Image (cartoon, rainbow, N blue to C red; front, top):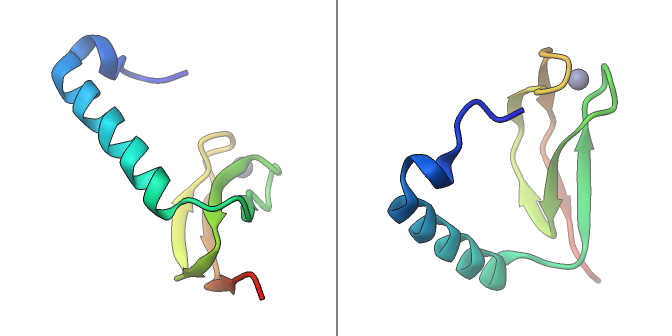
Length: 77
Ligand SMILES: [Zn+2]
């Protein structure tokens, strides 16, 4: 459950962010993706697009555990 409703709280900002998200997806997203799953509960924490990604600390929103993901690089060849 989300803690706030961004759309209701600030519709102007929501519209700007949504438009920016669409532009970013068009520019950078790819059909080749890898999901990072929580090692404790298998919750899908994030989805990576083709490219190079650094290591990252993330808190699993499902079980609350802090998870470290190692760097990863993948591309179409
Ligand atoms: Zn988890």
